[in-house]
Length: 200
Image 1 (cartoon, rainbow, N blue to C red):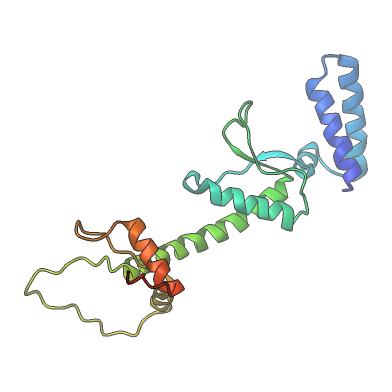
Image 2 (cartoon, rainbow, N blue to C red):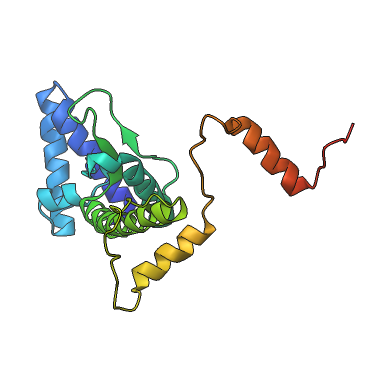
């Protein structure tokens, strides 16, 4: 269906739903019937093929990720730079993440979102393990307990953890006798820059 028909159908539906005049409503219905007959579509199919604001249901815990993926989809897949992702503050869609798509496009977006959501959670798990590794946040063993020995080759995830941990900056919680974090930051910058203290 061409964009012209999409827009005409959208305008006709708006007239049918909003006009207080019965004559206008009947004229819009008749015109819509002609378009449906020409396209060999039902009104439901036509509604699904028209771009309008639709609720994009996602995991609320990671709404920022959903917003990013939706914006990526709209601009990269649809080439739509004029209708950004919205969160409505009033009306029936209040509080929901909404996108300007057809029903089929919304389904495609949901599939892309679920794919990257699973990847995100997998990467988050690796990041957590790498963070523990880089900062040596190991649980202390009871004195005298036997060490745990592993008799298997590292998995692909284990190697990813080690690689990420190696690239991370590690931190140590300062004791009372150590300089403050700001002083330690300055000292570290001096070391990197090769600045030496004035002997005087």
